[in-house]
Length: 134
Ligand code: CO
Image (tube, rainbow, N blue to C red):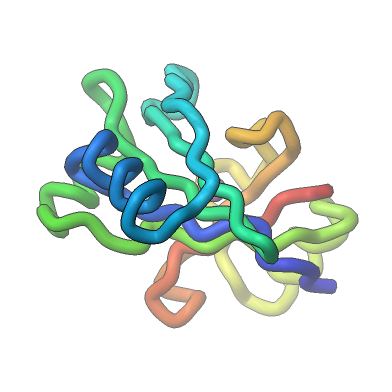
């Protein structure tokens, strides 16, 4: 069921500094910051040969990233995202396997314009896990 690693999302306290680090020190292909008000984040996409890194920074007052940065002021891995072919089938299988889906369990449109769900980190070895239908 599980497919490719689509991205690793890293919450960062300073988006410009993190972007410059990936661009200059690591020599990565770094995109421009994109505000995503619906998700309460500003995102910088970094394309690697085999996956993506997404730098996340809080946007607005109720950003889901702010609490994470309060607990992890230096930043940290916020979630990983795996690809699935059929998000409803994946969700039903995971729920039947005893894993909790965050929210009301219905897929939402994620940062890439595709349906996503998030699995509870306590059911996933302490890792917030996103599934994206591709
Ligand atoms: Co994501």
